[in-house]
Image (cartoon, rainbow, N blue to C red):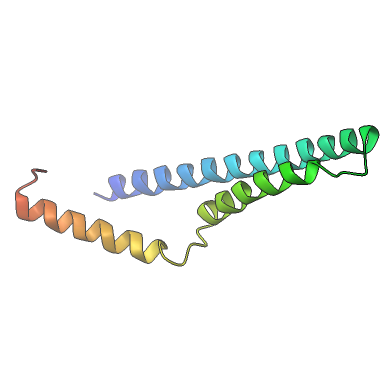
Length: 100
């Protein structure tokens, strides 16, 4: 049982690292691409700063990615997850391991 617990902890930690890598990759892409768009906008026609629309749209997506990655959601936090897992496990026991 202890070995299973270690494997489970390792798997969760590995998933967490993957989530962080994806977020930081997304953040790096955001900075690079928006910077490049700003330069193109500056070179072509700086009077209308159209690159800000891309920065805003992608920035909103990046914000929600950060909320999910860093678990800042006040509604679906770690305690909520644990409570729902326990509820589903109890339901499963009552059904004898069958899902209907």
